Structure formats: structure tokens, C-alpha cells
Length: 352
Image (cartoon, rainbow, N blue to C red; front, top):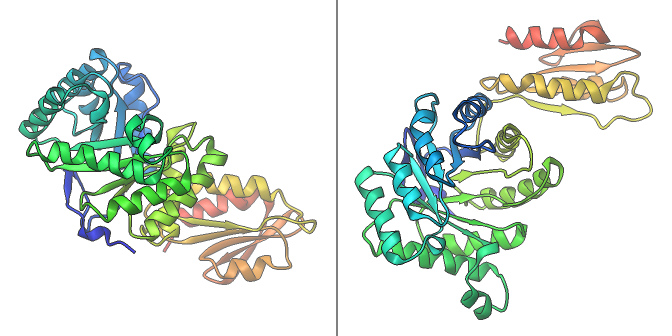
């Protein structure tokens, strides 16, 4: 087990991570960064969903210059993702990036890295050092006879030590791999050799179906071991779904409070209401109640439904096209199926 509270504290704009600060949830925009209205609109949606830190791609000067206009309209720290051209990192910081993400191995010479480090120091901007299994150095692949957890950890530490030797220590480290258990092992190795905060996640994890499973397994293991000061669930889809998944992972592990926990039965031949549709509608509806730390049950039949719903704070137990509203373990009233959603919403709006 590791103790994430022993990591250094890094300040990213208005947000601090590491030490005893809460684990921060991150995402990345999939809009063109130089399309400022679209990018701002997506970030505001992510804020509403519970995103703490947002990253955007900076592939060119237009994107770098757009950061200042984006920052004026959002409320969470903005991270610039830089590859290949160190000058984009300099421009991003000039335009207000709260953190930059670089892989020192792909932005050129040590002189280029030093230019970025010096600029970050003068602007008080932390650097996230990122290493990806898909771009591991050939010498490390040869040393470990393939892409391995040991090679990934060694690559990350080499880059961290390079920057530390330049007199800069305001760092966050990330190792990404689509191989879940390799990613876990690499973080375990890394955490034993550094006190910099770790950004954890499973990269290229896939669609919301496969990506959520891989991320839940990988992040669940790492977070439960005490690894990670900030996380991202990487999904091929709407980034808002990443935030919803990350919040639920943290809540399930007891690492974050707030937000409604929806439980529902798996359905069977006794179900006589549209339980699948109802459960999905309830799950979508409760996303806006981030300050309510309660459990809502949606049960499909009269066999187990009433008993299981009584264990929740609020619940519906289905019958034949109707159901029982249960609150604080007590049956309140009988409802028609059409009344389920409006009644649940009313109860949540007036919860006490």
C-alpha cells in the first residue's frame, strides 16, 4: 500500500493536487482548440458534470493563442497538451496555461527542454511529464525485451530527473498504457521511487463499454492501493461521460462524497414495468444533484423490490404497470408508471 498524502503538493491554477488534497478529476476536450466557442461550450458542460481540471490539445500556434480567450470564459484550470514543438509550450504559457503536459523525449534537444523549464519556472506553471507505452524509447525496449512496466517507470524517472537537474521540481508524472495490469505495475514501481504526485489512467481504453470496464479495473486497483492524486477515465466518446465514470469510481471506493448512487435490479421474467428505460432515465436525471449524498433504488418487481428499496434513501418498487414510492425505508404511496420520474424528481428537489 502507498500513502498518496505523502506526495508533494502541486498548484494548478486555482486547484491543488497531491498531499492531503482531494483526488482531482480531469478530462480532455475533443474540440479544435482554436474553435473557441465550441471548446468553451464543452468545458462548461464538463464543469457542470464535475470536472476539476481540463486539458486541450495545442498542435499549432493558433491553438496556443486561443488559450487566453478560452481562459476568460471558464472556471477550472486549463492544461496545454504539447508534442514535438517546444515553442508551442512557450506560447501556451504566454497565453495563460495553468499547466503544460510534455514528453521531454519528443520535443527535441535538452536545450529545448531547458527553455520550457525556464519559462515554466518564471510563469509558476507546473509541468506534467507524460510517458506512453506506444512511444517508449528503443533502448529501454531492448533492455527489457519489449514494452514493460519496468521500462515505462524507468523512462518516466529519466525524464523527471532531467528536469529536476535543471532546478525545477513542480512536476506531476503520468504513465499511460492500454495494458491495464502493465499500467498498474508501472505506477507501483514509480510510486516507490518518487514523491511527485501521479496522474493515473488507462489510455486508449476504448468506447464507453470497454473503456469503462478497463478504467474501473485499473483505476480501482491503483486508487485502492493509495496511488494517484488526479485521474482521468479515457473514453472514445463524449468527454462528459468520462467525468460521470470518474466520479462513480471515486465514490464507489469511498474517496469522494456527494452525488446520488443509483441501484437497480437486473430484471427478470417477473418485471412488469419498463425497468431498463426507467433506470437509465433516473441515472441521467440524478447527475445534476451533485450535493446529495444518497442512494436511490429502482426495482422491478414485488418479490425483492420493496425490501431492497427500503435499504435505499429513496426508491421505486415496481408492480403491474405501477409501483410503490419508498422513502427512508417506509412505503409512502402507490404510483402509476407515468408518475415515477416526476415524483422522484420532486422528492429530490425537496430532499431533507
